[in-house]
Image (cartoon, rainbow, N blue to C red; front, side, top):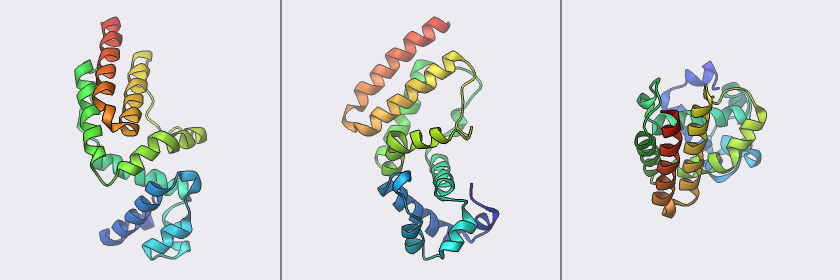
Length: 174
């Protein structure tokens, strides 16, 4: 996560650095990203980068969390199972928002490549479900998002499939 030094920077400087991170991680997978390109674009010293972030993975995690905060409506996280239609609406809203915004390439790259790299590091940071039904829902939702990002033209079909799967799953729970 970003250091206190980074967090204490003026907002304008943080925005310049975030934009450099966004450009790098939107154009390159985490494994291929380079600090050199980031510092050049941001106009900062290499040493400053390492004062702000422990390494590239730390910078990536910071940026991705920042982007999710920008895109995701966290007010929807209630302590209950939602209906199939509520989950589908959330996924549809997320995909609709992402597909037309500056973060599309980053989020698509995250779901298709970088997420697996981060999971391999197994730092315990991803949100984990508490039971089998929540795990199944999380898995279905993430797969629907991944498919919707890879194939935006098939979004309606993906959402219909998600709705049917969640309806069947939640009917067994009820």
